[in-house]
Amino acid sequence: MLNWNSINTVLLDMDGTLLDLNFDNHFWLEFVPQRYALLHKISTMEAKNKLQPLFKSMEGKLEWYCLDYWSEQLQLDIAGLKAEIAELISILPHVSDFLSSLRESDKHVYLVTNAHPDSLSLKMEQTCLKPFFDNIICSHHYGYAKENQQFWALFQQEYKWGKSSTLMVDDSLAVLNSAQTYGIQNLISINKPDSQKQSKNITEFPAIMDFRELLPIN
Image 1 (tube, rainbow, N blue to C red):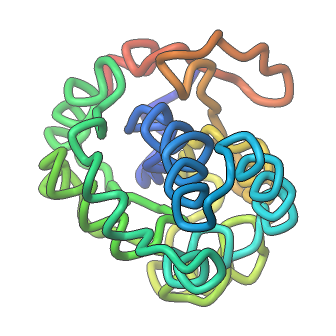
Image 2 (cartoon, rainbow, N blue to C red):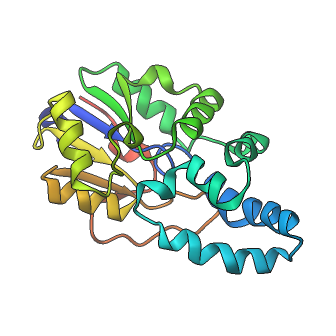
Image 3 (cartoon, one colour):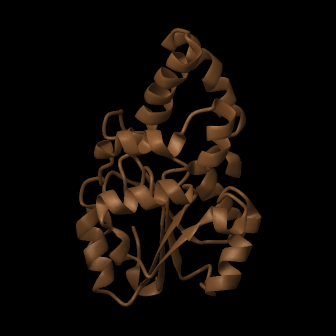
């Protein structure tokens, strides 16, 4: 699937790529509606019906990933709520083996995420993955989500990676499409970002079930 000899930079998404998306799906689809319902003294179903269109309307925008934005909109301490169920944060299968192999190679390895800094810090603390990366790039630093071409332009300007020698792995098709439009040539998706859901049938990009498929790294 991949010629590692032609790759010198690896960009890895966090949620749904390295980490089980079950945490985020449970948090936004179940836990937040439950707390919103308690706050407003309505049923959980009423809360879901109100929140889901609100969430949908912000998909792909930086605000969708911003805990401060949702704390203000929902009048809930979103970062605090995430910390309450932090024990649910987990790494997807064979991620550690893959990251260990990358660290032993000559590749530059970056975590590239839309996650809000508070969420990012919590997840790095829970998973202890931070030492595997040369740097962690948060889209909030640039003011644009990965779905936006401006993100890629600013990121490349700062880190000087080449479009043809860079690999991007991400579970979001919107992000992969954005990266492809920018010119990144090596793009891989994730078939099973949520361990509790069925695998996806992805045809737009090469896709893997887990990171064993990308080993060994030359």
